[in-house]
Amino acid sequence: MKSNSIFIIIIQSITIVCLVWVVIMIGGNKLSTDSTDDYDDNFIDYTKVENGLLLIELPKAVAINSNIKYEVLRKTSFVDSTIFYGESINIKPLINLNTKLLNVRNKIDQLSIQITAAEEYLEKLTILNDDNKNISDNVLGQQQIDVISLKNQSESLKDDKANIMATIHNEWGGTFAEIFSKRKDIKLKSIISGKNKLVKITFSTDKINLEAPMVVKISSLAQTNYDYEALYFSSTPEINVNRSGMSFYYLVNDNRMLNEEKFTGHRSANTDNRQLLFIPKKSVIWSNGIPWAYTHINNTKKYIKKSLSGLKEINNGWVIEEGNFIAGDLIVTEGAQLLLSEEFKYQIKNENED
Image (cartoon, rainbow, N blue to C red; front, side, top):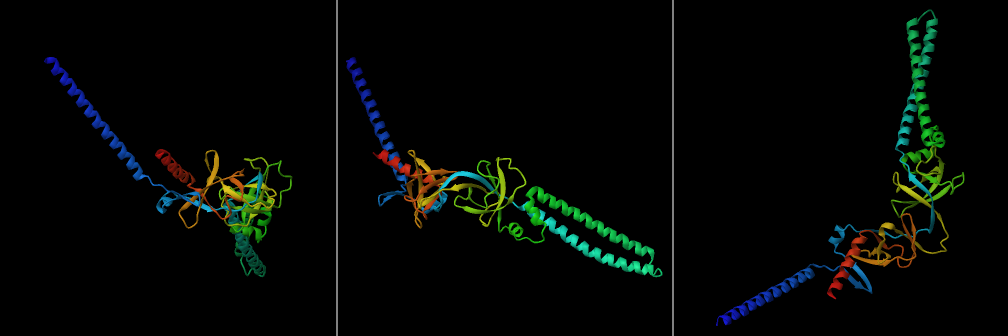
């Protein structure tokens, strides 16, 4: 009898344990399902397919907060290896020298007028002094002192002028010293006013003879779409310590150029009438070992990812033939990685559902 009671208790305990286990399993599955449902409810799919192309369409607020930027894709010349480097010169020191020189010249001119008048007055006083001492010796002597003082001031200013000219010659070169010696010079006025930008270009010794080319094409490293034509101006007085080679000044008639902006120059190659485009380096993203870039469909919130092919890399981007991309496309320059992550998020969700 006692054995039967123990057996019944054991059976009841096992039953209770089994019931508790079933309740826990059912509750866990429900929680898991709820979590999955919550994930699905919170997931926002920004991708869509139109005309066989996978698009990413971001809400306006998301696009603004993501700071996505794009620029017009432009045609370019096919370029070969870099043959020189350049830098836009900050001409503020040159402007200061010009201001000092103008001030000194004006003072010298004013003193010259005063000296002429003082000497004429001295001559009259001398005549009066010689004529029965109508003017005292003291008055005559004071005027002589005044004339000498004015001349000494003039000589001192002429020394200042010579020092300024020497500084111009030593720091900016003989051509600048020559044009500064003139009262008016059209080229100097265009440089000082900023109409023409001054660029220093350094050629490596193996890429140039002793004579610099009169016209060169330069490409901006900061403003990737900007190319400029630079006209030879003069040699430079100093050796470029950062890059071995010969340096020359060039003038660029373009107000877009920034002070101390950096440039490279390339040898243009025959394009064989091909339509070539420049792709900024910051636009290129890599996925599965393939380079891609996004374009923005104007007046929409849509972005398309396109593969890049036939790339030739240069210092600040790539050159490709027109085809998959065409001139005038709006290529994404900032935010491409964000767009790629949105596409991956969509793909990962689909894989999980499978």
